[in-house]
Image 1 (spheres, helix red, strand yellow):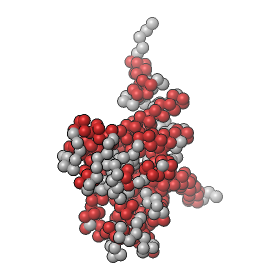
Image 2 (cartoon, rainbow, N blue to C red):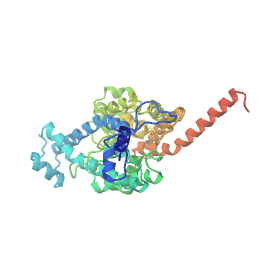
Image 3 (tube, one colour):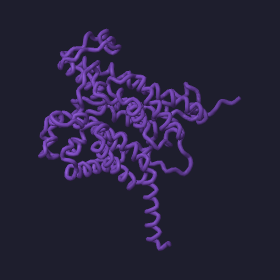
Image 4 (cartoon, rainbow, N blue to C red):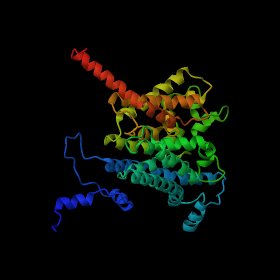
Length: 411
């Protein structure tokens, strides 16, 4: 029996396989084959490299989120809150001693890790489980998309969330919004946002309350969006609640800079607009995110908020909120840079991407102003725009066909 030649050995080495061992191996070893037929490949980018770069772009957000969890917990202790008797505290105390208001920066980072890592690994393991199940049933390769889905989902969670809710949310997003429609590349809704929407509406008291945002039991510190939904003296805590506050005054406002840098209460990865823009900027430079979508979201948000500033209800704090504050509050920045730019669920044509972005920006502000009980509008705005993306592509294609027929004299 003759020994297999080198190309045959390489093919055997890179064969994807269908066992659990092969699935995990495929996550680290790329397929060595190349396309032999007519192709439209522009460069060497593929799913594995795409997901790796997106994960690296999220690193500034993740690192700041870990630090901010510890910082907000320390500020809560300084304000008089008490440490809860939870397994997080037991682990921290066993490794580093008691967490206090005087704990060092290293201690705050470790405190944040103890809260964030369980959320992320729970989301990752749950997503991986469902991906392996559907890959086995369909006899397909295991795609690396679950890695980024778990990252994005974990960054939208409050620090104090129960882990069973993470399992529920990410399971709904992966199974219902992605795998039931054919898996990676076939889903029309962003799975991370679909999972977030599911637990947001199914368990509102467990997800959207201020008590879940700080990793200290019994401490409630409202976010900017929560304060804006109030009236009277509470609303006056916000500097932009004043009638003569213009959008550019935010750049001279210390509170706005705290919100821009991320030193405030919020979901794990949504507080620092600066970190999000740094990671998102790399996505734009590498062209993994289309600038038309980001520009569309930003222009749509600015135009809609300016319209409400001019013609909206003067008594509503949301209506008078300038666009500079909309940018740094809630999950708007994370949604604009990392969720709306999902290449699978957005429009594919260039004009379609711009219209898609405009719709996201418009709907995000309309939801915030019109529904003060649910101010986090970017999540629903992106899911809503996901449903319209195929129609935008269809209209753009029809317009191009008619224009070329007219240009060439074809009736």
